[in-house]
Amino acid sequence: MTQAKDVDPYVSPRSFYGAELRRLREENRLSQEQLGERVFCSGAYIGQFEAAKRRPQQDMSRLLDGVLGSGEHLQRLCRLAQESKHPEYFADAAELEKEALTISAYTPMLIPGLLQTEAYARGITRAAQPFAADEVVERHVSVRLERARRLDDRSGPELWAIVHEAALRVVVDEPSVMREQLEQLAEQAHDHHRVMVQVLPFAAGPPPLMHGTAIIMTFADAPAVVYTESAHSGQLIDEPALVTRFQKSYDLVRAAALSPKASLSLIASAAKDYTTP
Image (tube, rainbow, N blue to C red; front, side, top):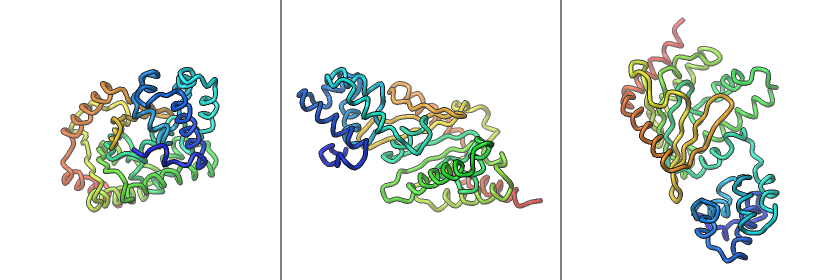
């Protein structure tokens, strides 16, 4: 884990929050583990805040202020540090995505955000927000494409994406957009050394994770987390027992999905369907 002492406190509001948390903790002569015990989390979790790796939370800041005797100092800093270009419900997951070693995603109706083309991202954003101004839509698309570029970084995560066959068949915007999206998906599945794609066919029946998107992220120095999402809302889950249940459900989905080779053939076939009048 990046040590808090390596972080410049004046780089961002989040860095300043981390520096202040560390200062207050050390003034109280508490280790990260000792402070974590008092606010019902791990020492590693405290370390992520101090190293500016995790977005501060109001509830946690309230507990920390209480234990450290800092009034509402951390709560006020938290409001500044929570600013994000992502929707509020996804902001924490987006930050953790940057640190993930592996990402295992199951998406029942859409191509995963990290694998979307610009036109596809624009189409689903416009479908979800039909009355939004063009600049709002374009901002969402830009942020999504920025996230996707993370896969090409040397330090980027390994992505294992399981896509339901429905995502290949639901036409987003128009056939040409779908053809481009599926051709790119097939190319990534075939050529990208850190991307694995499987398709869960209709014939597999109801999957264990049929109620919405589920994304499992693992890290080098922190426990795994799960992000679940439905329309206009999302939830980050880090309770170990519940994360384990999601991991088991994901394994069942993976077992029911087509092999990577058969999945690639189905994706390529679906792409050709969008070229046929």
